[in-house]
Length: 109
Image 1 (cartoon, rainbow, N blue to C red):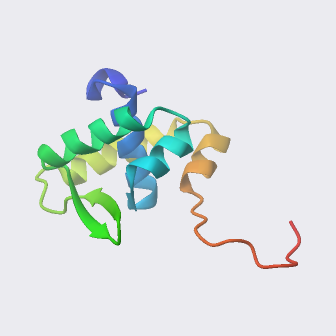
Image 2: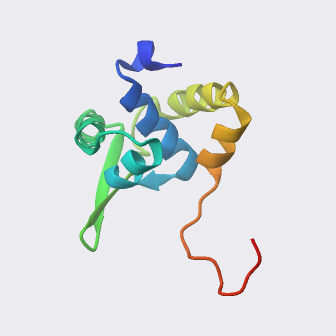
């Protein structure tokens, strides 16, 4: 939807993923969208160089999040929020649902 504005569909995916989940890493985003890892890594690197994102190490994993000092952060988040409203309901729910822990043993599905 916003690929014409951002240049590539993967840049849009990275920004939407981070908007919905607050932080993430390239392999997680590539797995979520079923796309090539290297192209997602390139988008993370370009956005970090541009000052839109910042990264930090957590063990061996480099986590990325929006840079709070980015001057257009509020406008970017408003644009992403509005574009997320036009996504299909099932894709929006899948994107927003964060599941980091395994299911408790014996818990019904």
